[in-house]
Length: 465
Image 1 (cartoon, rainbow, N blue to C red):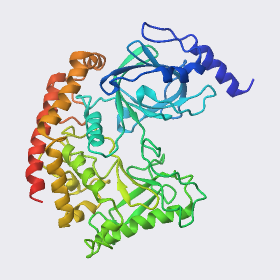
Image 2: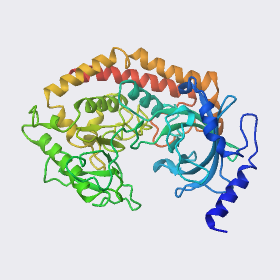
Image 3: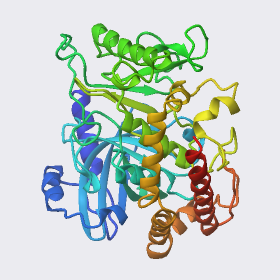
């Protein structure tokens, strides 16, 4: 019997043995999963808590590769998904935490990638189960992603999840869409390796400012390209930003396509570093979508994201269009939840990180200092901030958003209580907490008060730009 056939038999045999509680189902007929999903009616899913039950079929979850497992997704009395997945640990620093985060793919009966609309989200096969741990509010990522979507900048859509693995309760998780090229996620054209003529080569691309994805942490011509300008906008400096190829992947992107996007970034940065960077025709606006840079700035500054602009920073370029920055990603160390480099403070500029942490390897590009020298950019930023502060980012709106999440997680469902019964950390320092509240209510109050102080400071500071 072939190895793949043995694996199929092993998985199927284990799946029919999965024990069931009141709100789960024996996974004995994966062919019916499409029918299950079609019948599922997602009402108020944004504020609901889904139950995810994973059976690893005797295997142990590791960093790589994904191991075959079985998943059921339920909400109240409805089964929304019952089928195969491949699952692994995800994250870097977070892997040191007891509470792990996971990446997983939905698989069909043959254990191939298969798109499903998990928990009422647009169908895909790549998913993330993020387990908030150092973020004891449990909501920082979910909060900023919802804000981003509400102001018109796509961010990963999310769902609350309580997770069981091999019948053991793992706490509260956030189901998140993985950022990737997709009509419902980063909606850019598919770029084939053969598409290298002038008409097609201009898109789509996804580039990421981040740590290297290579196992040894290196940046090479294979997986990245380097800015020709340092973090001060000089061509001769040695502190330069690396740009990772995110899509097409390093092993799939054609050399001509690498040259195209590398040259596009160079021309953008050259125009921005020049004395004529404000020129309406040949200045920086020729290359970038200015509105996306303004919203990206507002979201990072609102939260004082200590990783902002320098890590987990995505940019994408559609065919025959300008460079767009975003979606935002990874804000668990935002809103005062970092005790280093000013991450705890509400009264500093996030984009001036380089000035506070001179020895850090990952730095903020020179772009932001230069953009804020342009009066038109600053005026647009001021007007956008004032508009958002009058509605979506008003103190009342932000507090109501947080109160609603607290009510769901603590009062209505008790999910937060169960999470902290499982993970008894509320009285402990978890890196890099700037505040230890001792209970969940205090963590939420800290978050609300920090945001009030932050928006007050930003009202004055943006006005003074």
